[in-house]
Image (cartoon, rainbow, N blue to C red):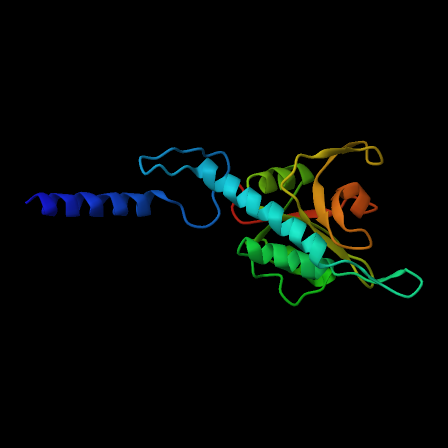
Length: 192
């Protein structure tokens, strides 16, 4: 009968583990240590590291295209944002320009919550996907919020999110260096 008890005990542990591990984005503010040795905080740290790696990869993958004079003639912010979004499971941004991404986020508040730069940075620090966006007549600009502490901007006289910027200048840059005026910030996934 010992094998029978072992079988049921093992099955019970597997079911408990399946029931206690959340699927998809995790709500903020919850740090739970369950009997299955699962920790929401551990999951967030993994998500944050994956997000940071995706941001760094996109910056390297999409340098600006320059003409013979060294002038920037084409940038790929929308492609970089799409790749970062796909890393976290957001497939909503495929085949869209920066202006179309902005419009899509505005028109889908059930998917993208418009919020402050502070909330966007906090969401990214938890491993969540957030981005800054601004439209323009011809080409707008988008950039993922990097999972990094906010930095002070002298030009805006306040702390601002750090963005994984792909554009005329690629890098982890303060949002005030990527946009002339305060952009709109969108958060994807659970943010409560």
